Length: 146
Image 1 (cartoon, helix red, strand yellow):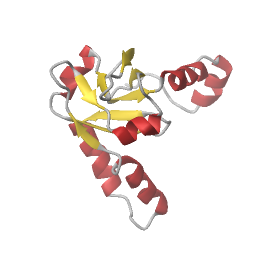
Image 2 (image 1 turned 135 degrees about the horizontal axis):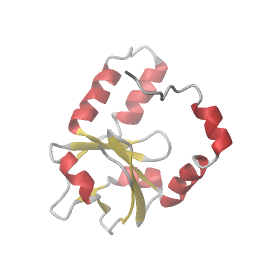
Image 3 (image 1 turned 60 degrees about the horizontal axis):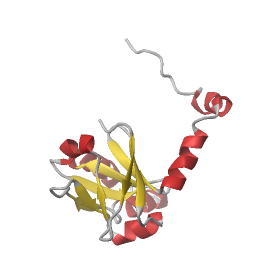
């Protein structure tokens, strides 16, 4: 699983060093694409295939399904880490993030996200409000399943 938060720099060629803990999970291939909350998502090839199959099974007559396809598929690129553990962030995705020299890499279990550090800090601030969290998460059943 991809877990934890890491701060890394982006070099002048648009390469981002991936945390060492994440590199082994990307050896079978990976994909990077635009995320939902002004971030990028990096998925293993296996997980990306599952996402692709679900999107591909959606009704093309549904405008929301077409928008989701455009968001995920048209912004997806295969990636591989080089010997130094860096991946190239495609220019259009760097432009989308408005990112140039620093990034936050945040594990999300089956995938990880790449954020502009200021926007990541805003996300983390939202998670620090106990009253809001009680409302947000009360519908989720996180009780132990037997």
